[in-house]
Length: 252
Ligand code: UGY
Ligand code: MN
Image (cartoon, rainbow, N blue to C red; front, side, top):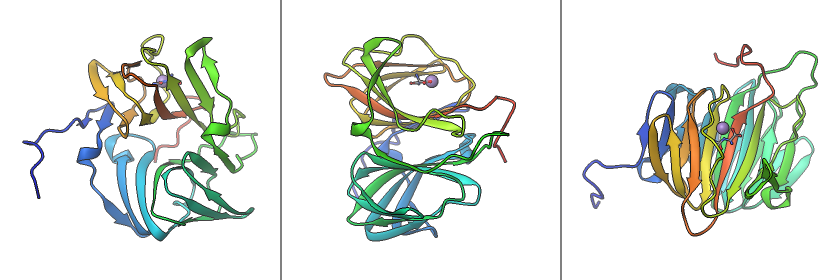
């Protein structure tokens, strides 16, 4: 095997944030993911309160529901899967996604060789609120709205905003040269996947070049800012804790 570098990688794992580039991915297998290899880019072992991973499924590969009490969000990146669940069976292709609440039985079946990004989070119920329901959709069918009136930064909210949901998944779309308007600091946590394009991500006091396929973990209060520097649009999928008081916790 060719040695590609002298111990170099763009991956950087710090106390409150991490950037993970594809060159450092370590594949493993899991009993729940038959005929698949998984790469856990973000997990509680790192200090996060959720997991984010890639599932590389061979045709015919199958996955079962996650651990008890854990909700799952999965988006197809390449290939096609069939999702079998209480309300039927659906085929999901690239940029189709499913939010599957904790305790909602389902099976994922790869119709062809497929690549998915999966987020799992221990659900945090809200007293008096109904539990969330499954949501299945496609990024392209969700309305894009300008962030704070800036049409050079559009976002799509993939999940309903109702209080039943304890997190959100958004696709942020930056025109070339657009940026987040200010350095954000917030108690909510993020997991991010660069879908296209690239730019510079500021995390704490570090500035990282990022490109398609990169994953970022932003822990609570990690100062964050992004500027899109490529010639084309930069788009990322962003998980964010949402609708829950900072004094409530799902940490175990
Ligand atoms: O919604 C957000 O917190 C988002 N603007 N953060 C980010 O893109 N890093
Ligand atoms: Mn943010």
